[in-house]
Image (cartoon, rainbow, N blue to C red):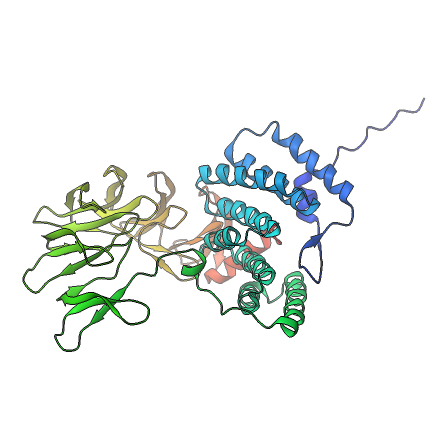
Length: 441
């Protein structure tokens, strides 16, 4: 008697979406689905997976992927609801890459709805230099399409070019999509022109363009000038720092102490401090006397008591500080990383140096010449055991005792054996291991 074979389980909807290659409409640069019913089935399976997903990471991922499916199917209200909820869950994880993906997928929905101001802001916020190049290239590509919709064709070209700079070499699919985009730009420009002059990040993010320090040639004193070069704060200071968070530290000729002023020159805090650093995250480090550095908020109130011999700016609520050794404090003055390290030496795999913690909340610490990694909560992710260590967007590059490079994963576990003579060779190996060769936005 024949035994019926069990049917194969349905394909995982996330894998189906990851392998899907959308067709791009050459006129409106929107993805086209050839089989809407198949995509509706995928969306339903994502819904089924959501029913058992309880952690923030899973819910952020599944909701934002369902937003992608709904967007392409034209169900933009559903896509918007899912996109916003996905971003809430992603932000709760504190993971830079997860937040960036949720921001980008929400921005794409907003672009299709014609909500360009918020879409462009989210694309800009998501595009951190600490992300993998393939994701940054995708962000620029989609920001270009948003600019295309708005008739900002020069700006669209700039984004397309940046995408190619990041990932053009050897990425045939990106090259093909960008070629379609540039052809569409050329056709539209021939009809209507290239549109407004490209915006900078400050304009896209709606940041105030604060006055900048400017010197009065006659008196040799400093004031502040606007973008047109007109003095908006009179030149009456011996020293003047740039504005940050709408505030600037200045020192007048009559005092050796720094004062704090607002954008129009109004005094917020009178001459009080022997040394002062610019504001970041709403806090500034200052020195009042020999008790060491302390932090004040934007009204001049003490937020972190004195007692530190050296400090670094606050970043995402945490700052590196030195007492008996280097550690870190939060915005309330609580020690979150014990002051036991000999230094913070946070370098990224692309060669850049970060003063303290990365946007993702990671820092490379030094203990007796050996490097490790801690996060902003003080958790030791990689024990200080490596002569050199670099932070990669998805891994850590580290050397062994004979100078050979390998990699650890983001939990500090071995990922690639230390057999390479140069970190770039390790990066190539990491790229080959990544599964999101085409980030789904």
